Length: 459
Image (cartoon, rainbow, N blue to C red; front, side, top):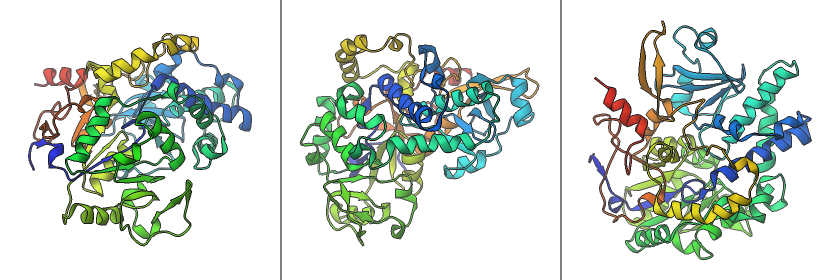
C-alpha cells in the first residue's frame, strides 16, 4: 500500500452527514441537545428540575471519547491499552487512590476488550463518541450527582430513562410529529444550529462529480431531517450532487449485518416502503439497507470488480471502524478536536463564525465563557494524549488515548473539517496513517499540539 492517499485514486467518495458534511454551531446545538434530554427526564420521569440549570463552567465536562460505566456511575477516559487515565463519579473527579479502589493497582477497565474489538453497544457501558449524544455524558454525570444528593442508590436503572429521553427526541417519527424539543427547535430556526457549506465545499463536490467520481451520502438521520439539513447547507438542488443518498442507514449495522436483516427500502413522501428490495439496481434515494447490496451497485456504476471507496465520517463506532473493518473502505475521520489544539480553522469556518456573531450576542448569557465541546477540557485534558502515572505514582509518561489510537488504526487520515481540503487539487497526496510512521503522520493540515509534544519527549 502506498504511503500516500489521494482522492483522484478513488472511484467512489462517500460522506456521513452530521458533523461531517454538515458542521453545526456546537455551542448552540449542545445546549439544545442537553435541554432536550433533561426536559424529558424532568417532565416525564420526575427528575429534579435543577437538571435544567447549567452554568457556562459546567460545559467543561463535555468531552468526546469518555465511557460511562453504568454499573457504578463512573465516567472513564482510557489509554490505548485500556488503562483508566482519568475518571469521575458523576461529575466529580476521582483521585488516583479512588481510581485504584475501583479498578485495581493497574487501573484496568474490565470491559475494555469488548469495547476495543467490536464497538458493540452494551448493557454495562456506553461510549460517547459523537456530538449528537455527547451532551448526554454531562447529563449522565449530573443525574448520578443528583441520585447521591437525594440519597438514592446509583445503578444502571437510570440509564433506561436516558435511553427513553434519546428515543423521545430522535426517533424516526419525531421530526414529522414535532415531538420532543430537538427537531421542533431546528425546524423553527435552522440557521441557529447549522453552518452552511462554503462555496469551496460545493465546488469541491461538483469537481469530484465532473471527474467521474460516484458520490454517496450515507446517514442514520431520517429522510425528512436529512432534507432539511441539506437544503440549508447545500441548497435546494442538493440531490444533484449525489448519485446515491441513503437515509436511516442505522450505522454501524449498515456495514456489519447481512442483507436479509436490513434490505434497502424505497421512500414515498418520506415513508419507507414495507417491502424490502432484493437488490439495488440503480442510483437514487433509499432508506436503511446494507453494505453488500450497495457494493454490488457500485461495481455496476463504476464498471470495476473492486471499486475503490473512501468514506468521510466523524464517529469511530458508526463510521470509521465498520467502514474500514467490514467494507474495507478508505476512511477519512473528521476530528474537530484538532482545532482545539493549534490547528487553524479554515477560512470558511472563520467566515461562518463572523456571520454568527450578532446571533451569539443575542443568545443566552451562558454563551459567555462556555467551552466548545471540541476544545480541550480542564477536567479531562487532551483528546489525543494524556499523562499516565505508574502504579507507585512516582513515574509519569505521555500515552496515546484510546480514541487517538483508534484514529490511527481505523482511519486513512484525519482532518478537522472537509473545508480544510476542499480547495486542494483532487490529486493532492496526503500522508496516511501507518504503524511504521511517527504517530503525527496522517493529520492534515498538521498534527495536534499534544501529539507533537509527545513526539518531542519520546527517547
